[in-house]
Structures are given as C-alpha cells and as structure tokens.
Length: 356
Image 1 (cartoon, rainbow, N blue to C red):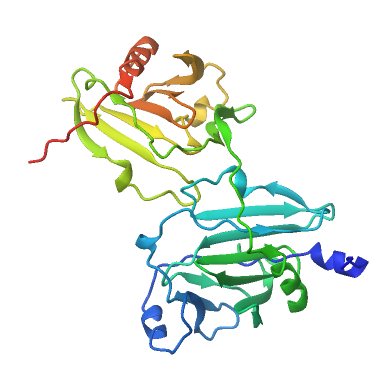
Image 2 (cartoon, rainbow, N blue to C red; image 1 turned 60 degrees about the horizontal axis):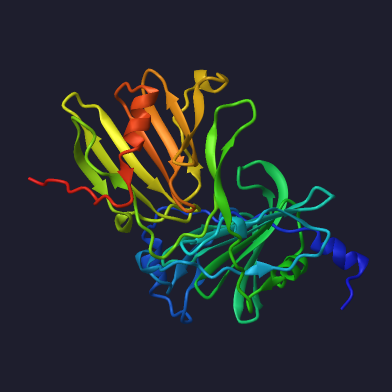
C-alpha cells in the first residue's frame, strides 16, 4: 500500500528505550511464582510508573547461550540512512546487534537485538502501554527524560521474539500507534548475513590513537600463534585458552593470551586477537607526538611499534583473521621487539603452566 504523506512522517520518527542490565536480584525469584506462558517473556517486577522494571523469565541461562544470535532486519523507508550497520561487525560469535538510522530532519532510530537470557532485567522509562502484536507482548513507552537523565521527549518499545530481546528507540515522542508501525517493520522471516572486510589499522586524525577495524570471516579451524620458545629469562605464569574466555559484549570473536614473567617482575603478554580493538597503550603526552608510533612491515603484513619509558609493544597482522600484540614492561629496543616477533609461529605448541 502506498505511503501517505502523514504515514511517511510517522515512519520518520522512532523511539528511545533504554534496555539497562542491572545486577540480578531477588525479584526474579518472586516472578517465577506467577503463572506465565511458555518461552522467554517480560514480566513487570514492580509498579513504578516513573521507573518501571521488567524481568525476563522462562528464558535460557546465559551460560547455555550458543552464538550466533539470530540476526533480523528492519525495512525502513528510503528516506532513512543507515549510519551504523551491525552487519559490518557481526560474525558467527555475535550475541548482540545494533543498527542506527537517521534522516535529513535530524531524527535518529536505534534498533538493538540482544540475547533474552533468564533473569535479564530491563528498565523502561516513562509511561507504559502493553500491546499484543502477532502473538508478542510489546511494551511501548513515552518519556520526557532520555537514558542519560536529560530532559528530552522520546518514546520506545521493547519486546521478545524467540530468544531475542528487541529495543527500538528514537529521539522523538510518538503515540503508541506510531510506535507499533515501526515495530511492524522488523522482518522475522529472513536472516541478515554478515558483511566481511579485511582487518586494517585506523588512526584517529591528529592523534596516535590506533585501533584495528574490519570484520574478517573467522574460520572454524582457527589456529593460534605462540612463541617457539619462551623469551630469554622469562617463564610462563598464566595461559588463558580461548575456550575459557567469555565472548566480549558487542565485540564478537575470540582471543588467546599467554603471560610471561622474569626474576625482576617484568612481564611479557602475547595475545592473539580476532575482533576489533584498541591496540596500543598510548599516554596522553604521546597522543600528538608524530614519532610515538612507528609503522612497520612484518613478513609482508602491516604492524606497529610503540616504545616509551613504561612499555614496549609491537602489534601486527599474522593472517586475514588474526593479529598479535606483544606487550613488555621491561625496556626493549625496536630491534629486540622485531626479534621477539620473529619467534612467534603458528606451528608452536601452546605453553604449559606449572602448577604447585
């Protein structure tokens, strides 16, 4: 059906809900005593119209979640621009997605998808109305205060579909009918696919604030890189296997870390990374120093070296889906860092930590 001018205007506005995770409390235990439908759903924990709390019940335990989370899309009119696309950072480890849209009128929509794990607590500001929509309970709200506590008219909705907790937010006030029109734009019959791109170093203009950007596809048979032998004078004191690491919230991927220490208490950290992250420990004084960071090439791939009075570190890409950082608290020269990096190999065995 063609969109009328009024209908288009309604679709140009959306909702700012605040899905806030709070430490699980005794409320959830009380909620379980109430008769509820099967499957994860939201139940209001207490009657506070100014600061209402909802809790997810009958969901999976957080420890039992197996990524990736289903990735649903939202079909907005062409007048909207996607300024943050979750597909460009998602992969087989994703447990959270966030898309942000804006238009020429300065309005912004934020659409998030998160795992609706059991006892998850959700705070929703403002006046509430629960709407039954396609066998789902949608909690709509209107508020005069945004999630930062500032005076700002806004409105929003939160709801659960399957194992996904949805939040649709905007920086404008909408009536409930208009909110539900936006909720109806979410598509559940098709799954979004990740958009893959190679890793690269990004430096903030005018600052030595380096991050790794990109979204490479992480292979199923991922193999890590280790030292062929411990750095001279150092013993391994800690080894964190990637299977023991909980996935970083909003940063899908894995990492593997080995810690070494010498008799003086100096440490060397060897870390394999497969997701975007800040990569150097730059001090405030070094942010505007053009000589604080050196760009290098290691075995044909881009790398960075950073040395100051407190730390010596080198970072480089070892494959299309992995990069390595070596960080040392003992003084090291540029060449010593390069020599240390040369002892890292995918053929090396993981270290064994002696236990007493």
